[in-house]
Image (cartoon, rainbow, N blue to C red; front, side, top):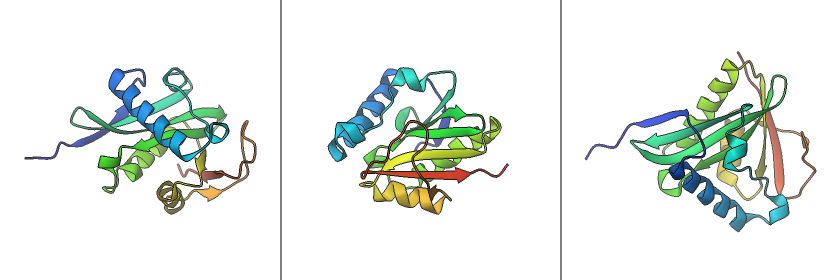
Length: 156
């Protein structure tokens, strides 16, 4: 049986199958961190005009997502990087990250920052090998011992 081709494209986060992925992401984060250390955004926020939400699919099956929202001119915050457990280990996270950076460049964004939890070593490793470096809290974030803040300047 042939494996379906993976596609990554901008989609509406309010679709039922995407909502299920977001709920799975929420449950994963809630199992790892207390509520005060979770900075989750809902589907309505992800559908806002200042946000780009990308979905990875294998055929019609939703496998992962990633988003950015503009927080200042030329500066965006990454949100909702998540790959379903059964789709991990094949480079999909890296493909999502590259697709997000490409979409940001098309919108003349030259910097992406993110907040991630310290209990996600695979995500942290991906960000580091992709050029993200630790930075102080940004935007409305406060220092949190369970959070790691990272940023990257994008080449155009």
